[in-house]
Length: 122
Image 1: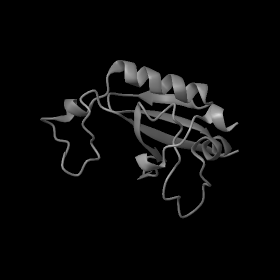
Image 2: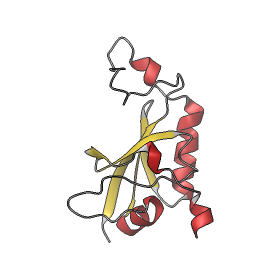
Image 3: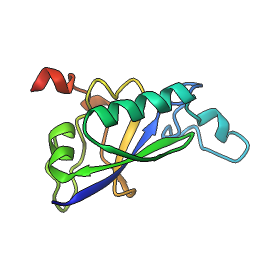
């Protein structure tokens, strides 16, 4: 079974988004984009509860991995080439996660694709 590596970009404590084109991240302001420790812990706890393995975390995000079929089920996406345009993010993650990237390359989640809880769908 294929293992997928992914990265969850966390919501910052300041409310600023590093993905906002009008808010470039620089060495002078990078701390404004850091998530607070509670947000990091919450994201890791939710990802673990969903069945993923958290492989690391830092002030900007959480790295995680899991079987391809789990990624497809949780994020409601079919993994293929070319990669999907967006992932459907569970409500549990939306308050703490701003974006999700697979394989550390391309971002596949747009906040407009938010959906209900994984538990609601099973």
